[in-house]
Image: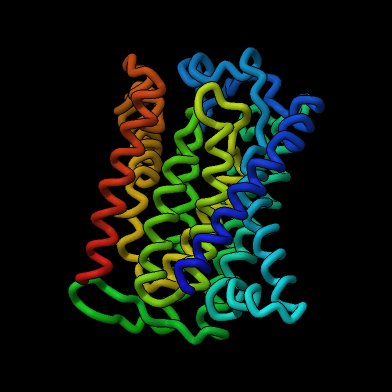
Length: 348
């Protein structure tokens, strides 16, 4: 029955995602929900010449907010099975995966991240948006993520009474009140991995692999509700990816990346496998790290760069790699490192 509890909601989420996409897509194109200008200012305040040439937003006219497909299909699926369980249906009760201990917090995190990201996306597609920030400023987004991280840390600490962190091959470390600081740090760091949303099919495939890995880990740890939730997100991601492969019908953008990155952190802590998150989410790590290395290098080396342009996937693109090659190789790396992470979770 546990396999069915995962397979059926996942399938439903995928179908819902496919069905709502034409409605969303028509709305986005009708209202011209794409950036009206390419990015002209880099993160460090300089002129983003290379980034501008790679994105070329004003000519592509590809809408943002595609991440709505992912979280909307997941939430609709969750609500459907929860409502089914309230009408005294034995089958639906068994398939319902909404539970206080396993899925309340990740679902709450998904919703809040999605809404804040949606506000940012809406601001970024208006005619008079801030060209440097592209919507909400980075400081405001980081502040929002920090506040969410504190709420999540408080829930773990006070409601779930979780303060322990499992260290693979060594055992359990009771972090005490330091758990709150560690949780916030991990969420902020993981959120920075959202820069991976830069090429058609890249973010959807990578996030799909990551949540599949954690879904398998949760299932193997008998956290069936959490596993079902992870795979429901995978169902939504697959529906999104169906329309995001080249040429992309729309981009995931902030409403998807913020929702997914901060939800991923909650899932990692719930499975007690947060220390293998950098392995399973390695594609996010290398993209985020490349951006930070670039900024640091330009700051301490008088403007000298390590990469032609950051993050790494755009650097590879600037080297002459076709976008599809970059995406496929990111997927391959994602599968390899997700597999390594699962093995460590099993034997560690």
